Image (cartoon, rainbow, N blue to C red; front, side, top):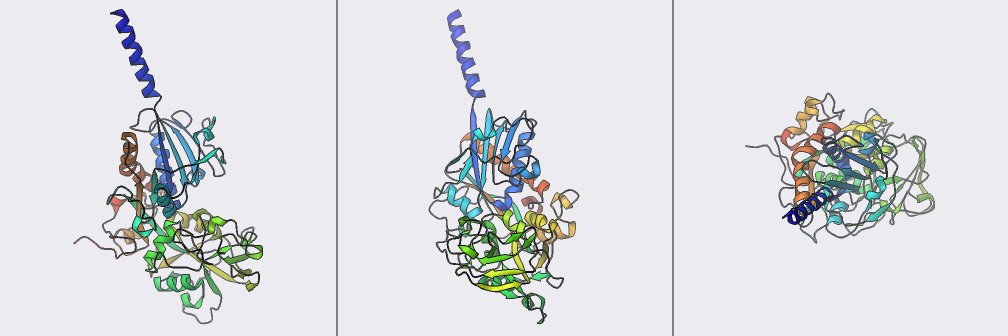
Length: 446
């Protein structure tokens, strides 16, 4: 009997040790436009169980050891106790754009993640500037600014079918610093004309024939949900070619833009058209035409919108000869409200869209902690302002019990909370209108 008791006790102790040693891994990719709310939600969930440095540790690839820098990072690793999940939960993020994210969880490409070993001994601070060690793998989850049907990813039906929405991501038209007072509004017709041609006279937007300076289109590559959101919202066609300009590798001097180029066919260019990297290329829709590429991250794009552009040389993305030299030009793009707020803080100018204006503000003190004044929030919630799309959280295959706990809690609790902290969008429960698909008319309940 004693032997049995001893064996039973040893078995129980072994089961207990096994349970406590259990590790659940969550790998997330997708929307860069939604990463602030995502990272804030994950951080808050961990801190609800234990303090940083005791309940969990975290490191990331952005510069600096603060929460604001963590939520702006592309890659991060969390490890600790997550609410509702036994043992250790390791969450790894690698944001690469909505369409690229869906492509990844569909098994068509493997993004690079930091490994858990990158945490090292983080202590009680958020550890920034961590770029190794890494590995490439197929992630389980992806955030997306658009429905799967607005991307070319169609080889795998992603889950959950019909119930992937977790929030609303809001966008703004924005011009770079130095935009004239007369440039206040952009219509979807003007946007279609600009993105089809790459450049238009300022007079198209101001109605003043004497405004002969040029406005140039800039934006994201086709791995981006932000790009899919603006092309569907303008009824331009998400798979259609665009003409977008980006800065060259030597085109920034301090806070001044000096050189821009149509995105080269390979995304990289040479000589005068050399850019910061081949990740600028657009490939998901199968067309690498000159101009069709764009920035691979909204963080790089929002930085550009905080720079002036009064003496710029422009290249065509193919030849080494300048199209325009030493000209006063303006850049126009479309960014999430959170990125627009950062760009405006740096000097960018938020514009009205189709005659309706909203101005992102810090969540603290805003209406329903939405990141908007009450008047602006109601323009979104009632459908007067249409520059928004649903944010989705997709996954492939089936979920384990712990993955399902994480997914359910993130959708119901932590993402709505993260949205109220980051000015990164609006909670689903706070709006009274809906739209059946990306870019479709907004309708109110009858």
